[in-house]
Amino acid sequence: MVPVEATTLQHYNSLTAGALTPGVIARGLPGACGVAGRDATANDALVNFIKPQLLAATPSPTCNLATWGTGGLACASANVTWTGVTCSQALINATGEYWVVSRLNLMNCGFQGAFPPDVSRLKALADLMLLGNSLNGTFPSGLSALTGLTSLELTGNQLSGSLGAALDTLSGLQLLRAMGNANLRGLLPSAWGTALRALTYLDLQGTQVGLPPLGTPYDPATLQSLPPAWTGLTRLGSLLLASASLYGTLPDAYGTALRGALTGNVYLDNNNLRGGLPPSWYNMTLYTFRVYSNPLLYGSIPAQYGSGALAASLSTFDVTGTGVCGAVPAGDAAANDALVNFIKPQLLAATPSPACNLATWGTGGLACASANVTWTGVTCTLAASNGTGIYWVVSQLSLLNCGFQGTFPPDITRLAALVDLNLAGNSLNGTFPSGLSALTGLTSLELSGNQLSGSLGAALDTLTNLVFLRAMGNANLRGPLPSAWGTALLALTYLDLQGTQVGLPPLGTPYDPATLQSLPDAYAALTGLASLALTSAALHGTIPDPWATAAGLQSVALSGNALRGGLPPSWSGLPLPVLEVYDNPALYGPIPSTWGTKTLWKYLTALNVSGTGVCGTIPSGEGAGGGGVRG
Image (cartoon, rainbow, N blue to C red; front, side, top):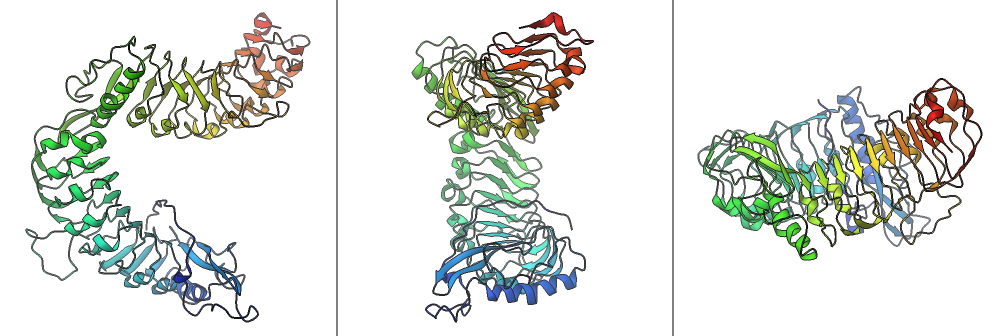
């Protein structure tokens, strides 16, 4: 058994009375006779059946079920402490509040033996997670009783048999994952096309669901594994069926019926699919389309794939190990659509005579038809090379000092492979672009000299690869400086937000200048940060003592603010060459005596405390110190 990582899904925890087990509690009875706040049926199933069965087959599980059966019946309140059990309020009646077991999560517990049939008695269950165990036996038909399920996660077990009709009643099911159950068979039920209309995520990779039940004769030449009836799954975002023993063709009908649904990933690789790629799929908005290692797939890539929604959305397209041939629509189609059809018109509409010529955008085929792109400000990088040829993507967009006006183009966030974005020296306005969170590959972001406003917010919290961040001179850009950067931006080496108002909370938020703390203690974890430039950034509060651990700092510029208090003695151990804190009138007190005897004074070459209340003599020591001190 190998532990498996779970997929997160938002669940609905407000259950209706109809989801309750009959006989548990009756409406209208006098309060003295009723039992409030307990899910007696679930208690019986968990304590008297499921727990003994699991422990009998698994003497030493990694999850402790000793809590099951303690503190009264299951779900005596929402604050249940039973391992893996979550409760939700179902209703309030004459007997009081009523709580039910809505979630059972026994992920990676190492349980063995047969799938516990009494799980099907947990009638109010919305979320069942048993992934990463070694449960065996046939696929549990009793799941049909759990009509309130929205998420079913059975990945990484040893289930076998046929899917059958076990899930046909689960009309609210949104996530279904049972990958890695190597002996699980199909056929994939056609009934799901009408029964599971809420389904958004389906993952049955590493199974045999493309085959009929064991012992059922079939002809590989005529077997059709992907049901045409699944055209009803109009909410399905990702379809993951790699290595699932699929036979037959790719249903042409999916191209029209699911064009607005399949917006994520389609994995159909390592199967026995035959025929050609359906031309009708050209208007799907897929992000990843994998059909590699299907030797019986053949024919040319449909010409339509070079246009329509598929060309604009597709990031990865792999037909290696197939008979598919012909030219691939060359270039980064998604970036091409964003640059030519959205960003370019927006910039030119607001700026009739820019200093940079965008006439090249849209010439010579799609963006990044090769590395030798001639589009102004656009740089391409090799993304992959597969059976269809070489694939290039837009990795850099530099429109420095072009004079562009108007709002920040939101479609820049569709350049998913972007590593370097430089829009410095324009006059772009509007609020700080929250959509930047989508550009998770960014290492350099340069927005200096624009007119951005609003709050920094959480726009950059996802950019874990960001090394360089500069947005100086955006005079109306507000904070607060996100504490989350202390854990999210660990790759950051250069931060420059001078000439902004990032030391202040969002406009309209009340604050007390006497207590406001602009500089987050959490930045102490940014041990790779070499340059911190926050001059004239409306900073308030003290210089954080914990920053003494940010040993990578080479230059700290905090001048022209409203910082208060003294210089932190703890900074004596920092190997810091440059520290500027001038024009902070509320900074006061002597230069810490420890600074002259520790690491700081050996490295410090420039210390400027002009226009502050810092006083006293320069500490004597072994370093360069005094020659660079002003104050």
